[in-house]
Image 1: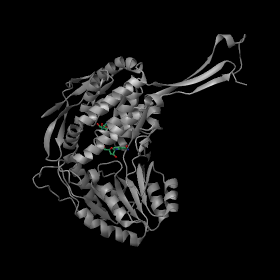
Image 2: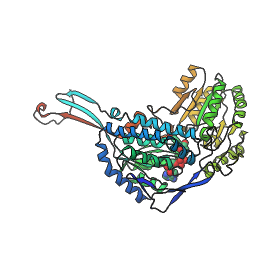
Image 3: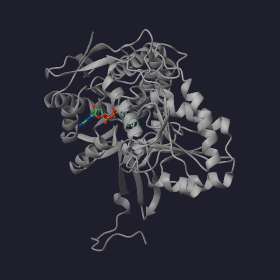
Image 4: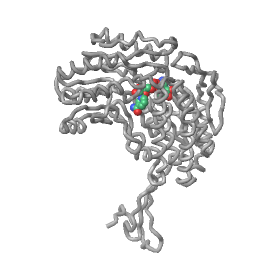
Length: 498
Ligand code: NAD
């Protein structure tokens, strides 16, 4: 049994609250360990540690800061198999998918190496008589990240790398369901030469999150998780005067036009709908075929593919997807399938009864496919976050676009078509933050920004890319005039440059 405490000030600190959560191994349903849940006092102590360390780190030149991240990248590569193993055991995703989770985080660390360039200010020589103006980007101080269970390597790295590269100290509050990888990232940062206190991993639940939101020394919070929690953190964090970005849930629609390459569309739906057991915020959970014959053809082809999906333990590299994260989440997803049947949708493939031979206590289910789902049903409106794909038939393109725009979530979407006019129109008019054209999961690369619209994202700036450097810094503008150029007398009107 592993006992996870916290990683504060560069060392392991046991939990002191007396409260713990279970950490499961979804592939066989065994208890892997316990994780300490921090009290407000423990969180406050971690913040004090970070606050004391931060000025020295901010004063370290940006290239030296970037070199620490470079060394960290070497260590992540060296420990790649070990990290993927921990990740797969605690989350349930397959080892190849766990390596993808790590890789998409690594790419954001690579972009954070460009901090010396990204932090450059602007300069105007001779803005007025003897007057120069320049701007600089300065770190905020102590900042925090609160992250979800479904990408325990990628999302912590999305948050901590740019924050640290900008000269901040960082408090990471990872998901209590899979804390193993975030704890290892903390250790590897110290091995890479990060000064103690600059990255602190504090495990916990609502109590530590509330302590983060209310701590006067935390200047900014980056959250990723479900919409209700994101909205709560955004509202309370902003009212406490903090900078907050909160990325929430999703219901990603994929439109299949009558002229789409049907082989490509079906392959895309199978990978994007069922990969990682559907536990991705960019998973496609709604397929929208346009026209009756497109829908009939699509469902005819999807059924045998969903029926033959290979579910397996996380250690089976040939499995299409593994178990769900916890038994409670498995029951919730199966409950949604029960609900869909009651709501009158056609359950074309039923994966509820699946058990994994040799792993009977694991948190498995097979892929499910619903046809004839309507926009009034709860299985359409709500995020299920499991291997369940809903087909909602649209009579024409305009109806498919309207349906996507009317949904409360706006994280990702995709259109499959051979028609450039339709693709351009969709990309331009759809009310969603990330759009794929014949690409089912359009997660932008690390040098672009990532963020959903509507109730999938709260706050002004996106994650990673140029926005990350803006989010984790504040701009100061200096207007200077040297004594030799200063004329005599006071000015009582607002200065203008003439
Ligand atoms: P979650 O909202 O349950 O948890 C996210 C974080 O909030 C965790 O660190 C958790 O400890 C904390 N938390 C949970 N309940 C809380 C409460 N009552 N008060 C304060 N803090 C609380 O989300 P999850 O189940 O870990 O992750 C899945 C969700 O995350 C899905 O909705 C998914 O769509 C979303 N997600 C979104 C993105 C994105 O970029 N938009 C990316 C990944 C996941």
